[in-house]
Length: 309
Image (cartoon, rainbow, N blue to C red; front, side, top):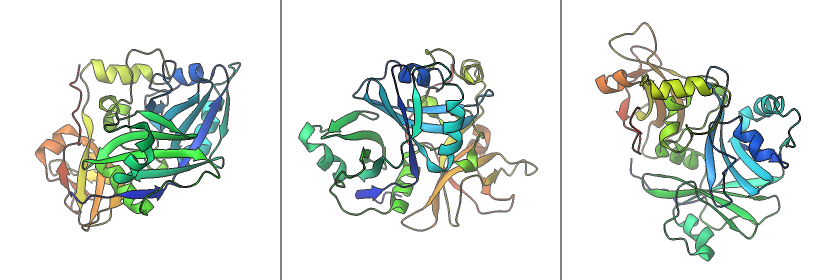
């Protein structure tokens, strides 16, 4: 599980929504789980877009190119529907939302490639969710994967690709899983409130900001101590994919969780982020696909969870 990965990977699985205008930050602040009004130019945000019941319809990594120009990276398979839903709420706000996927290129950087891309900044210990600008390129520092630094590299189309060894999208996808930070895709659309993916513990939810769709449900889950599901890491000897059900041995009549994200592991089998009942994780013996399906090797998320309030 400790196989390091280094290099540069093209990320075509991500799309970009661009929000521009005097009210762009204010508008997004009122729609997403995180604070965009106070978002600085040297930081990024993990954020969710929820329905009225607090269920995630999409997740974003967002940052400002300027105070009136914001990019939101999300799963490409949810971009069109998410853009349509967000645009419905713009109304009279001075904000314009467009699909900017064709205007920018996105790469994932891992290991030495991160340091090489930011060497001109003299950054030796980059902060997670920190953002740097280098010659018009935006570099967002992500959570590491098995201790390996990672970052997103976002630049206008036509910008020369970042330097580094070639890393395949599949290798990057495995690193995403090992980081424990899930991206919402079509396969798990409206399946989770943010805490089921540990978003409140990795900087994805701000409980002090104002209202947004589903805010009451998200806050109630946190402050009433009713969190019963969390995200964990899992490994199986067979292929896993997002949306597949998980079963605990003490109740085979209904699933105890879902696979959120999965990728082939370098040493064989598949690694995954799974969201499941805390009690099922603690008891063990959880299987994928069916009550008699492949047994999962489970592990805690690779970062500390905030204590329930």
